[in-house]
Length: 287
Image (tube, rainbow, N blue to C red; front, side):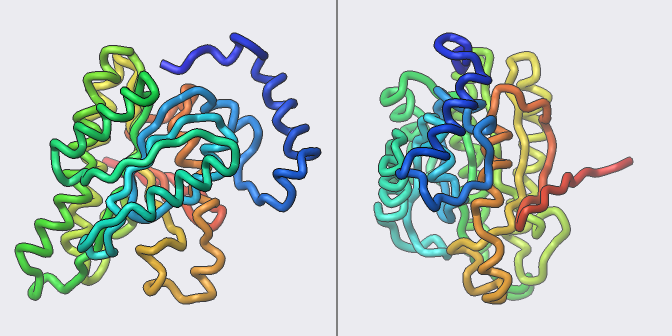
């Protein structure tokens, strides 16, 4: 569980000190932020695993927070083929250059052994794990009558099984320490459907079912699980969105909400948020 923020300075003192640093330190000149100093202070000292194909614009946010992200990215193509270290390394480099601390990992979340190693390595490096941001994803789009078993299996393996594998590996640690935060990346394709994405839609809505149950099972251990449907300009959407729309949907509009869902104070659990372009919407089922 994150240490008390009052051990060295009161929260308000930390907020005021950070705001002063942003205003006077040349290092931060010209940096655009979609988050406040209060957002930053909430996450200081925590350790989170963030695994992704498409970055959520969280590099500067993590560095300001002095949170310690463990960045996992296989670094393959959008369809899941290939692998490389450049994506994870780039995110870690940006965090370090901004004054933060981070470690890269290249295991595949689609493999249970790889996911277990992600969590094991994070704990060895930082001594604990406070949260998981499950954002790994690939696309194998095609209409249902043309969908192959391979296209179906590969998408579910990364999105749904990938989320399960990493969260399952972290779950015993969350229970033991009486604290944990889980954020999965769902999609409006899963919530509402989307032509040509039966595999992707099924996987993304499956993650919502997962966090709904984890929220119930984790309640007495102070484990909170939420889902975020990002609408952002990333490698996954660069040839899907019109250029004029793509330019306005920067990931920095998504990262603050993701970070807020990782905080100790967040009241929400089993909630789904659609986030993008400066708008945050709650999605819910009613009976």
